[in-house]
Image (cartoon, rainbow, N blue to C red; front, side):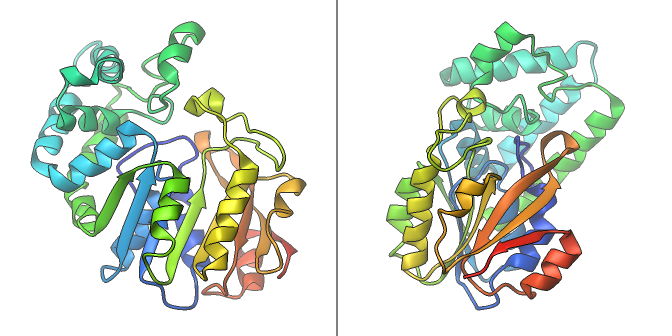
Length: 302
């Protein structure tokens, strides 16, 4: 459900997210931690009469979304050129080096070129902290997502061919290069009944602790601050679905207005990871039905 790969992508969570959406009407979906933007793009395609606000602090994510929206032809053309490189011997290695160069010296590449390289990058290759870490810990082009097998090339071809589909969705999207707190502050009072999908880049973060996200994203993540911002969203009457790496302390961030569930879904690498899901609204299906369908546990009811 996206043309971008990202660690922790919610591509496999989209079906559950559709079931968990608010039963009441909403006008705008806000995804302040875009990543692959899988949820925002899926909802945007499903509801063509509603708008999107997609934000991220990652320059490569922002540029890719912006270029597919505003400069589709040139971006798609560069994608096809780079895809043909994968068919040559050592093409994956060459493309990997082009990707790292585009992040080290972005001024030497056009915005559509950088977007095309980001679209080709796999989950590990997309991480901004990889430049420094990768050279020390032996990351290879293959591990970074640049593979030259026929299956991989065909997968890229499918993704590139679908870019016009996502261009149509992104025409209704405001794409922001901003910290999620800035997005909350800017958007919270400017739209009515927004549906927020809040999935931040923490990793094993618990309330009262700074998470280990800096190992993957180059900066730590304050889970306590996330709780404050989520309660701001709740206080003005917006709908919010929040995901957290599971630990019991995190449930305490949400007051009686929230329903907290403990769920599992496929995450990076195809493994099953355990998460906290909190919502402050009545979902499309009764929570008990969703929990039974997904094998989830309802931890607390507001």
